[in-house]
Image 1 (cartoon, one colour):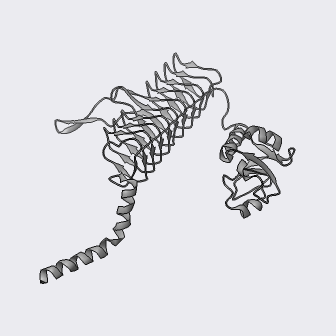
Image 2 (cartoon, one colour):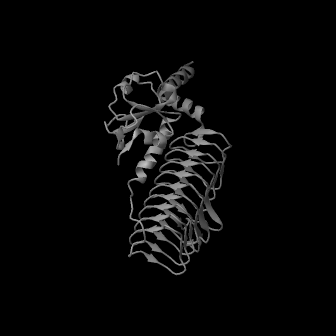
Image 3 (tube, helix red, strand yellow):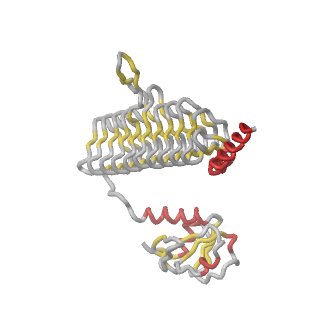
Length: 341
């Protein structure tokens, strides 16, 4: 793929300062520039590094005009990272990752409704009464259970499983190995053993949401597990039955949310955060990595630690920990002196 810088400026919405006919062929990083590539810098603190770049074009902040001694091609943009993202989307679209159409080995059940331009990979199985919206792509070895609805513009990577009766809305991305609608972990201990409680609810995933690789979203015992609009879930996350996740929230790898917990809008759960069941986390809460949330949290809180406390308080506690041996030694000394009096 080759495009000239005039086209690149149009794609990114930026202002070109350089040779409009110069052609670039690929993205590159600022740490590994390529004479035929384009990279970006969100800030210009390291002016010496930028001035020596050998990339074919650099996307910089509009505020950087006149502040650099860079002789190469530049595109100035209000938000360089977003401008570069727009180019990456264009670049990706020019390099298809799948074959269009329906592979002859795909197994499609009865009363299945497929929208226009649906792509279905090899050995994918679609059970009876499934609806798949237009422009959706199912990679090889995807499984869609009966009575499930998949919206338009979705992308399911290999080995995704969406079980029966689930609802996946528009432009949802499910990364490889994600499992949507597995049984919730529900048992009753009776007559000396654990008896399974049927999980007869479903999962609803709202539009613009992305679910990471090998992540599991369990179906509800009754009603629905709901993942809201534009939620981003990283790899290896567990969302248990009847969990609710509000719009715009981010849940990072290895986090786990126990059953029937409600997470508000715009919440951030960092890596390996554990959340107990049957609690509520308010809008805009931020939880640092490896924290444990044991009780409900008000909106806007910033938490850290296990059990989680206010962020600053936990930092003060952690700052004290290395001093404890010496403090304990002093305490024993004071105690001994008191006893000898």
